[in-house]
Image 1 (cartoon, one colour):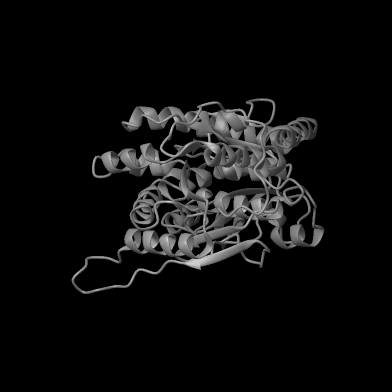
Image 2 (cartoon, rainbow, N blue to C red):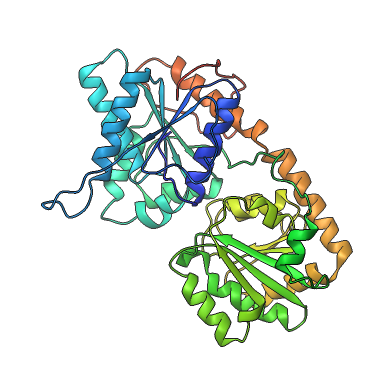
Length: 399
């Protein structure tokens, strides 16, 4: 697995997939610049390899791509990897392609298959930039298998890039045994400052512009006009300061808590009453799925892959990104109408269990791995079916 170590969705999914595969008997090697955010404890079957790019004065920046490809080659030779799974197209698909070419040149009989998983902004923001698009499309097309986390992202990829490969949709997933509501009254009292009548609204993200954290503040301002509530902003990123400045200007600083990045978001979600996600783009919406798993009703933008996760009016509420009044109205309904809230969270939890639990999704990756390993060398086409092939990989394979 090649992934980013940060709190973004691609790194989280790659790490969770590695852990799930290891629990099913596979040997997985994670390659990244730092220990991935969600790999906080030792997991049998998962080995971490750090790729470090040295800095030289003649170079404008550390050569991450080259260092990553080199580390992948080293790991592949040492452990006899059968598969390289690159998460996020830039630059991981390129690093995987370069590593495979190096391995083919030196050890042509032991070249691992390459899978690239597209997660979102690697296509919609970065990959479609003319500075990257041709290279990104080339590396995607030279993968043995390509997956996307939603139908929306598959469509965006074909629209934004000259990609010819078939793309299989395998959605993101949760460990449903972990992502569930276990209410902690002590934690809830601390967050609400012992006011048991306050509602707790939460937002979790990497605080980039696409997440619209200032819109979260604007919606919360509207909620506060009707409901005694507090806001919990979990995460960190470039827009955190602007959001907190807006809260101060609106006189809300006393009602907003921003604890920064947190390893354990489950406990925070499990004491929350509402999740806000007014993003301009979400290729899947993993944070919304995590909230749904913890029985927190979600109000979000009707963009990207979110309608594939949230059934509007049944498992949450969706609005156009600019409709802050509509989002606030749905939020107030959920915070004041207990039968409505109970119906939404019950439906949401059922949807998560039926569609997005690890035991339903991870076998789809295993089926793809098996399909690629059984295919004759040189055949890089992959069926675009969204359904699992029904064949499980044998344990103890290296990925």
